[in-house]
Image 1: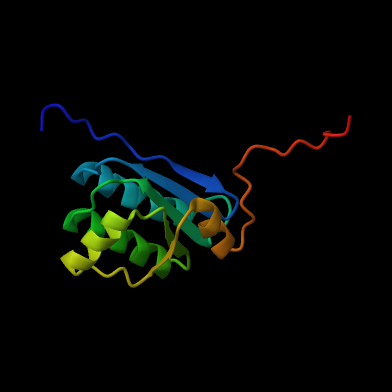
Image 2: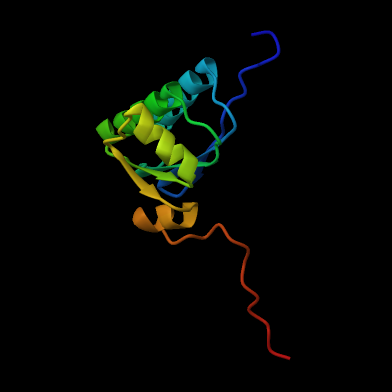
Length: 136
């Protein structure tokens, strides 16, 4: 695989929730690295992690490899007492997961990251600040 370097996927901490945003394809080494990064952050982070949001709105195609990776990440997080919410699943991705016979038993789904954060008990605070001084 000469043209592809394994770009690491950033894992952001939003209080006691980790946010991972997947874009495009996830290759073997990057997927493995992501699993290690998440479990390490849950186990050794400075604050306890009780939730993990995986945003897949930037993913067009899910194959059996990515489905398995998502299931393994959720299972690992669950064993470490963190709940996983998969956000932003496109209809074609949902259909593909069903066609492949892949179930994600330890995963809750949400249409958007804001909804996922709400499910985990965090107010969505990722948006731009409101305009408090709108008075003339």
